[in-house]
Length: 356
Image 1: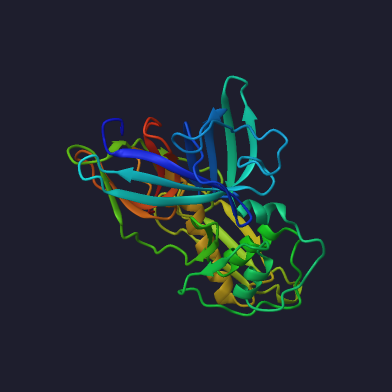
Image 2 (image 1 turned 90 degrees about the vertical axis):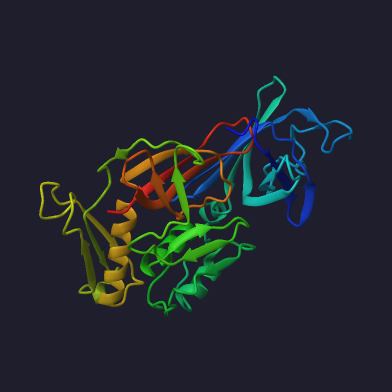
């Protein structure tokens, strides 16, 4: 798709702590994938030559980490900053779009001159860095999110989110990831990771998307294909959110679909999801959490897996519209994406969760 178009290449930089280990990792191929309902959301896979100069005209460097803990591609806390550089052949203008920061989790040498490196977003640190003892909240949702994040990881919040105090009578689990997701679900908010590795709590998506990107086929379009997919696996039409505190057992919120093909009043049947948290202290909070969970669960169920010309600007939760031929436009949000890092890496793939 990009072979005869503008110059497209990745810029991958290796860091350990605050020290740059390699300004340019020579990437032969690679992809970055993101999925909203995946634990760490984003993952990276790249292949590099065993021997290559870090800079044009430089001496060849061995890109196999071996036993060197300070190697640019070793797994001892090294992380990779990934950007896409696009250069116009006609004007020589250059645009650089930052994609993400990924902690290296492993590498493999195929013994044929190629090293494969795998990485994960910095949400992996919250998954791996368990608390060593039980602790109780001492502040608000925002301050607890900052306190529970792993050392060195920043946390930001959408200004639309209204902070509130956490009940001190509860205890957090030893899993930082579970605690952060509980805060997000109870707020309610969306827990994401930005291109700098910072944890971001976003406001829930609105009922109707306002597309920032319009995908179409035909002349001037970038849409390659858009088959349809649908599934009822794990998709509730009723969500019950209640307090996890036995002293507040009467606090409960119920959200249900009452119209459309998944209505509780129709042939779809009733599929219930239950969730509880001591962070819910009144009916309004429980109702908001239940509604947000219901909408998040339904979004990936009816989706359009789209193939398009690669676009490094697309992110999880972006509102988009899809137009193909004479079909009516479809509106939804990006729930997953798969971006090639090299010009010969093929199409970009995104999943668009449709509005109900």
